[in-house]
Image 1: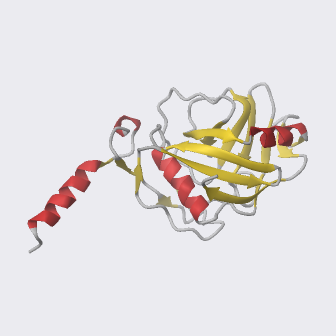
Image 2 (image 1 turned 30 degrees about the vertical axis):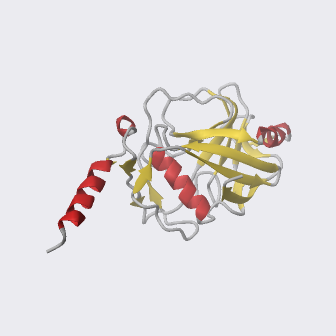
Image 3 (image 1 turned 135 degrees about the vertical axis):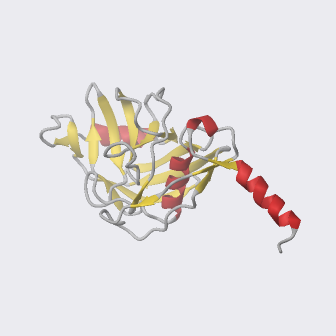
Length: 219
């Protein structure tokens, strides 16, 4: 028989961990579902994140591009704590190191840099997926960092940084915002785009390769 205090601790933890929904953001921890994708295996060896995430505070991460460092403040207390937890896990396992950002857009509808795919646009994820965390009121102004995906519930490693604005439906979990280094993103945009049909002349690969040399937690 286990001591009574052990059962009490388990009961407290069970009360603190609740399903991952925007309405549950007041709980200190929430459950996250990271589902393996055998048909789309990991592009690099990584361990799935632990199945729970904090909903308290923020965490800064820095992407060291060949254009310069960009620091992002991830919001654990926002609508997407599991997505934040996932990005921190991938950065800690160096998944993004020595990777390229394959897509850059600069149209009236969409101005983003898309990163996180190892092989090419939308190919080369972490070998698992997790559900969307959206409220339906998301907006994507300059400096927003959000998850990219290939449809509902297909989040993995792909993310985008908004360099102008993104007039898109509120279907992409917002992770946080850039707090330092937007000038590096602006230089990428100024260097131009190699169009890829049928996306139009302002959607394609960066004219000069954009590389994440290293990503770290902190400045």
